[in-house]
Length: 161
Image (cartoon, rainbow, N blue to C red; front, side):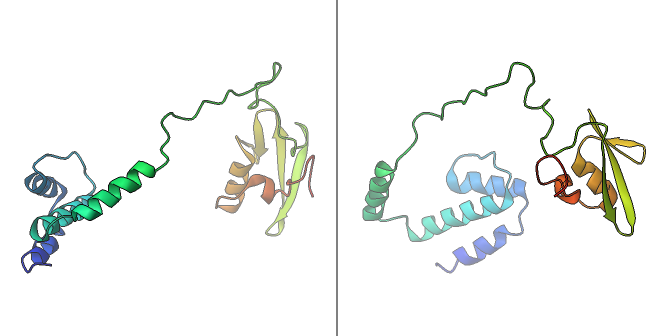
């Protein structure tokens, strides 16, 4: 690396994003809309090195072009998959097979007390509050996120394991 390139690259760290964008325009001859400081520093540092020491050799450019031509590129986006929806209930309305029917109560001992959650058609009731998911109930009980089915041991179909 040339002696004057090292300090110039080190000085980039001290610049703001606006100043980096101005510097980018100076070294590349075109503006950028990028606002990612690390990316701007890397691109400007690369360009400063190219200007000081030279770019890729012609042989390296030819090889890169060969590799790019051989790459399997997707020319069309993937086809959209059509979801099959049952005529009577959509997937969002169907109850989970792991849950007992609405009206039942799921219990679990937790830290010396018995936790009771009533299963409703539209959520779960715990201590007079209705929660949208079993995981939300488990979070209210434990204070941290955890899988509700795992917390209440409902991992198997139809009830506790």
